[in-house]
Length: 170
Length: 170
DNA sequence: ATAATTTAAGTTACACTATAACAAAACATA
DNA sequence: TATGTTTTGTTATAGTGTAACTTAAATTAT
Ligand SMILES: [Zn+2]
Ligand SMILES: [Zn+2]
Ligand SMILES: [Zn+2]
Ligand SMILES: [Zn+2]
Figure (spheres, helix red, strand yellow):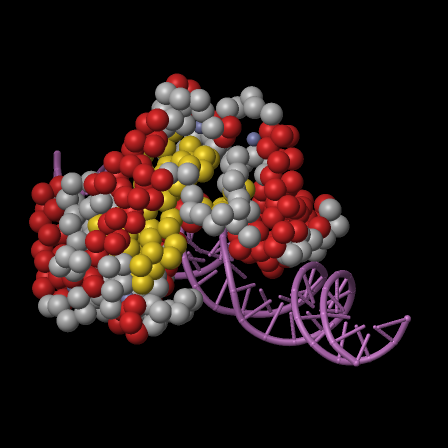
């Protein structure tokens, strides 16, 4: 087993993750002449509070606390923007959102989601991509968007809690 | 390009698909001593009306027409049963359900979904499975459930409508 | 600078998806 | 038939997401 990604390292320096994510976001938006407004940046920061997907409605209280409007459209607009810029991904199977650790070139992640602790890794997954592309090409299907979400147990949760079907919130 | 799956053959004998699906379902349920009740069978039949994923609420009117209760729990219960038996899959990215063309041994499909006509193919996808399993194993992640949903253009819709972002209903 | 245009945010209301909880009915077993 | 189990009926509500219109802010043009 190789070195674990940060998502599966409970003790890593997560402030660094947050800092890097915000820095990259500012850089990309500047480069693309897109406006990373205070609301958008706050939502991105909230999403990066952990490596666990967060539901849109979980973000609303923090928006209210920061003095912004906290009706659903506010957060969905921010999330739409962040998704369009590739700064955030939506996890369909959880109706939740997670920060992208390597935004920039447009890409489709392959997500490993721990059902015990919710920690989620976004893999680059070239072999997975290739396998999908080959299968699709074989049928003449033109791919526009891929969703690969794998639920299971991360290395840290296998000893603690091998029993299926529960979830620690956040 | 090889022979297309039935989902991408607009003129295939779909009555045969329906008939086979129901036959397999009856066989499997009998074998497992599970009750394929009238509601459950009707829901399965409705799902098999096409090779396109259907939302749960789209099934309710037909349940009402057939004289059954048509409140949401009715259809969700039937869908839960059918999913548990592996007769139906849920497409997370569409909040919709589709019949499984090869139920039996428990499996996870890889779905190719046409955004123009909604036709959906479930691939066996051994290479995709392998690629995912390898990536996960490399990190010591234990897989319990996989979601692979690919959206794009099927062979039939590439000439007609190559422009992104629309949908023909049902 | 000022006005016109574009973009983003505030606000209200609602649509769509899914489940909780409990009562009634149907089914299986003894 | 009596009993326990599973399924269905029913009502209500939770959770997720968007439409539509207004106001405010930022950008661009005059
Ligand atoms: Zn981190
Ligand atoms: Zn975990
Ligand atoms: Zn068919
Ligand atoms: Zn198509």
